[in-house]
Length: 634
Image 1 (cartoon, rainbow, N blue to C red):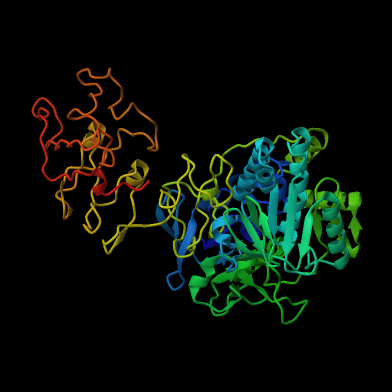
Image 2: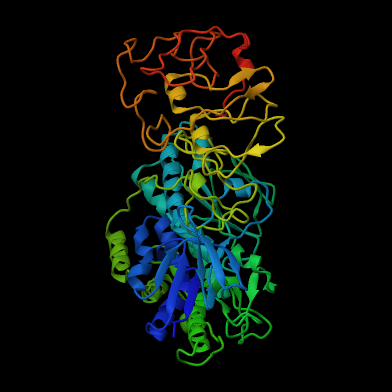
């Protein structure tokens, strides 16, 4: 008899606990497959310490292959689920497509950043749900303080040293608390010229900090934040985000280059495509975490609306504590449904307390209902995290000890750029890669996704212009270029974009072509005839994989020469300017010869023994003004 197939989607708190418990319960009597975009489990509560430079990124990750040896790991993101056929279709990290069949499916896809219809937020803010976002924030904050230290203008210095965090829940409160300590430590070593101090602002429309917690804990956190210098403003939020700052709901404009969005989370958009009953974006399940009418389908964690049996009529909140305990019950009920042991159990849980790390020795905690603050709360908080982590306990404790006795290293690693971590994404755990495969196009990024790059002047989210980052319309941006009058849109290829070539002929032509490698290397125009009506003719051969020109992924060979750069004006070398085969006119596809000089017509074949290069040919179809040509998009 074949072993049943169990498929788990997501390796967050719920998915990881489900896989680990099922592996122990089934003891090899079932095929267990775990689908996840990354090869690690992320311990989210310690992510603010990564952004503050206390913990190294690998400290908060646990290898799935090492900790789940009996579980098959498949890297990818779920795209579509065919419930009738029992098949899940996914996309791998390199764009490859695949499918997985199952007898039992556990949906534990987690959550993504929660968006609000506020102008400019999607373009200029960054979330805090994944490791790439934490690494980006650490680099960005470090860069802003360093640039502020060298700024001559006091206003520019103040703007760079102002950091706005929206959302005073667990994440936002911890980010602001750790962030203030992090920047203060930087300024103590390298004081700002104007004698300024970094300013962190914490905004929320709620009446108090940590509104979901006990009022005593909320008051403790508020007091610690204000003593540390955080500008806490309750009943206030962002009305509009702009290039230079944010407009608050009370009308004040705050100049800043940093906007951290910690308003909350929403369930992964995957569950919306199933067409099953939902509750505020979450999949409705019974107390046994099974979807009604679908005996093979279970859901847990942030994507599941689980009835709270301790509070009839409500559902368990979207917290890591509930997700971790969901995973255990889901695993036991899946095993019971397959006859692999145990009996079905409903999910019941009574909260035993909460902990909030406020940096240093400060924290707010109420274990077993006992309210603590100061050093005792800090000890309980760190002890809880060490006990809850499924791995790396010794390494985390060692980093804490080193942070207590040694200064932090505030350096920019440059591993994650602004456009790699847009706010509106269904994959906050994966950094976007230039030219890489798209992420669930139907839910990946909205019209205002933050895709602009950081610039060398330290521009905040939403700025563009860095030579090493794609701006909108570049590979990885997911946008489409439309030629005026063409009546159709066509995505630009990575080669076209990197070289700055026009998509098509002049406006209105509706035709486009790529230049061959030979034409590009020699500075020839494209192989089609250019007329006043547009570009037509047979498209040139596309570039082979062999040689990358400047700005192409893979290297920077000699100037447009195959493999080397011979002497100028020598046979086989770099032709003299304005000579046939040399550099064509500015704004011409291919290079820059003298202005208004006729460009040579290309030969039908690359020059060689059988096809010598032709002499100059005067063209009659070239306008006198080179600006009449369609210019390449920059």
